[in-house]
Image (cartoon, rainbow, N blue to C red):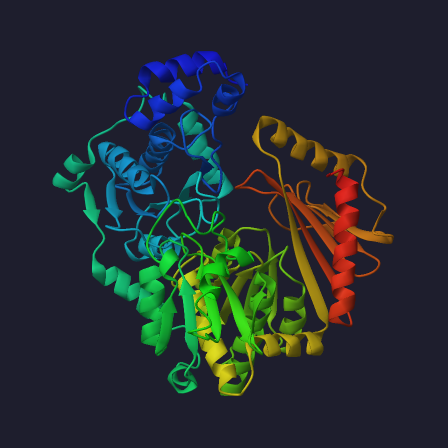
Length: 567
């Protein structure tokens, strides 16, 4: 553990670039718990980059920790590439713009050319920019759907997906050798602009991105005919302009935006948890539905890489899960491409191991090749790149994860809520022309393939004690594996940290994940979040009816909670 008092004293002396930091440090003087939480460790840098609470200290997101990470990246890039370049984007979060300029300034001082968006932009547009501008790396300042106190620094490789474990380890090794006060090369952002070390990304690239998204459309002609009504909320984030633009180009005529959540605001005043997974983010929009009875409500998270929906059915709005939307997209795209005679031979659908096994059943129906990969969209991006290298990119149909991330094109290598919003709207319009709501469409999928019901239980453990508690839980499961869960015998175990399973090996990179399959056919997957202080439990129950599946979910959830000793 760090020497917290020595670090506190050092920061009081040297953290002078941001007045907010000194005010915070003074406010916690003498408070051991507060000082401990800010300095007991350094923010860790991994494949997801940095993520943490905004504030003063080595365990916080601030101009010093961002600069240290950027210097580590700069040293890595200058060692690895000739004349490296970097693209940068940022979202609406508190200090995202400040951190973006900080990163650009450090890169420029290290002789690295930077291309930065002149305004906040979705994460997938950063992935697109890296590829289109042939950059060596990319940075986006965002904490995705976390509460407003968080921010983050995500790093991308030249192919446009988040960096690999190997690259992250090298960058981190450079970071650790950098003194965050005296070891960082700096120049002002204004000087970087003036010397052409930093250029703003021009509008043509944004337009090209939207054109690529629209190229993913399958039944564009039905949208105008459907008369579909869309109510959209960007949740005070980056989706407002690009999502509205692409839906207009798609042919949506009746579109309204939730006014209280339209403009960028990192405080997220009407949605403290700006996560399209939860119903609360739709509450402001629901207030508008009496006067504007939308067929479909859409919410994108602050960096616009995740999209959630609520659908109108018999006058009631029902929230659809990420698994359900993924299953609908899979069935819609595969069935329509088959009907049009444009479904490639051996089409590829890529999902994460925690995404519903219902996708596997749909793939069997259409003879699609389903790839099951670790959690993290970068693995889906890697799969697309491998297909592209073989000249087989046309086989790629859809990448999806249960946490509301989708990608139907190869223009980006990260999940894309601009693309997701577009194809979901088109799907809803298509079935509206057939007199079917998306709720009815989903029920038809359950009736065809079986009721696969899923639930994600999140349990938060803040601070140093919380991190240790999560580690103890995972150790306990490994040292004393459960013989049964919810009264059903465990018949298969997968430990992705060791790579071992009951019947062989996972065949995937190492990851701190445990998976259990019971005799009943139900499954449980447990993993600590890589970006939040949470342990996540993914439960799937399969049954012959909605009622039975819901009952099983509740029972298994309670059983796992007791197994882990969570109160």
